[in-house]
Length: 382
Image (cartoon, rainbow, N blue to C red):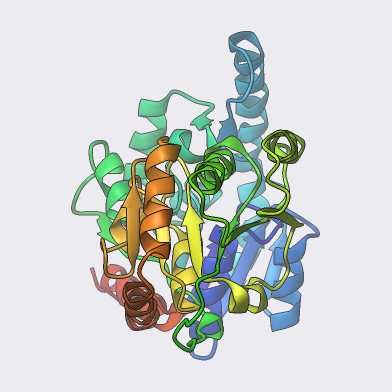
């Protein structure tokens, strides 16, 4: 099968890692091509390292971050909308690759780009659209064209639409053909899997990993740790892994609350698997995760997860089985949940085992890729 994946970035964030996971499994029996809007970056480097055929052609997103005032957003939308029209010209440049390689499936890896849909419509090729983000709720991103027109275009130019969680499915099936939508959870490489020995100490190491920004909830985690320490529990440490614009503010909060003995900033960590060897529990405090890749990474490392009761996170955590849910936005509730997991080592060890087996039995790249390949076959047989 000849497949063209449409990437949306040059860096190596969650969506691109998930795409590489699919490629790593299916590349041996299929011919893989990737279209990328970025000439350089970690994602492009990974394609090179794997020997994957890719074509760099500049194209533009039809969604943008609305992180400015109304007037600036209006101007930004106009600029993006005008730039986006050039995607139709770009389609001509990609035509040669499509025709020469007899592409049968075009797979768009994100909802923030419409390039795959334009190509599929122009060259009459089956199109899979992978929705990996809420948009507004997680990244504060919105369509630069009228939303109803964009969703109608998405529906009309897709043979199947992959939703990575029930939460995503519930949002988009209000606007899209429910028969086109297919729930397929993300999968992770088995290289993340590591089984730990039962815990026999009372000291707990916590980790929160991700971009340092409001939506990821690091501030909430810091306030919760402060509450735990104030209540007398000193056998705790929180590691904050990641970089971003919120770092200075977060460091100021830690300094003001005199938490430097209990909280450590690690910056961007290239090998989280190695770091997770010393971690007991992970916090996922995001406002709204479309899936929750970090949640599954954590569980594959035998780490139970305390997560916000929103988005995809609440689908992955089974209360008291592989972690606990808390009320998003309520740091006191988070603190009480942290204390709960620290107060019972036997229960913690049970959840650690459950998290390990649950994640590796349900969320591997192999399972994900098999589901994707079956979807391709279904589309091509129709």
